[in-house]
Figure 1: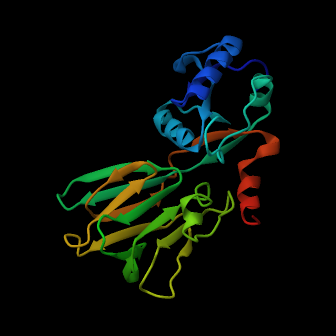
Figure 2: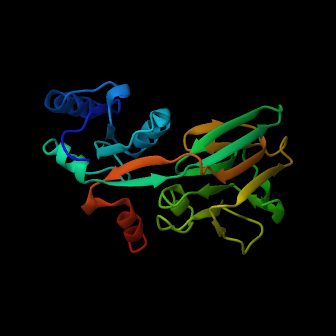
Length: 255
């Protein structure tokens, strides 16, 4: 769209972000969420993820500007020319992962993940996890510190740090990556079509408890976790044309 945007500003709880938001509100105003057409988030990647989760019901695009420690999902911070930047920005639509976790107490929890769903051991003993893809057992018993499923947008984050592959945006793929695997010795993960249904079953859960995390939301003592891409939900992020998320993910493969 052209012309001035109706902006709702949000900021991380750090002094620098709060000061920047005050200055931006003085220049561009502050619209209530119901009247806004864009959310501008000031902070780092963690705050961007929290903003996307928090304002999911608003169905508004989110434009981030870096004022935190990490800013892979953010644009460069600049006070001037914000309306023009918003009008020229590219909008990227992302489908999050849906996680359904069942605990040993029989409770079921659901959460969405923009970056990844991860299972992690809770004690000093390795986790034993069975992996099924579309109902078929692919790994009978993975002995490991954990395992994760990553979206393309999250593939250069935790997934990359545990030697998982970087996935280009638009590849319609998910990364399934073990964390410090001991058995099977030669299995280092898989790249899967985004249409798959992944199920993790925790073996010997009383002796070897496991937690499940969807981005920052953690469920402890899980016995099973189902993961699939949520096609009915699309998160909209905005990036400057010369600072696109797609290009940054591509560039990460050559660092």
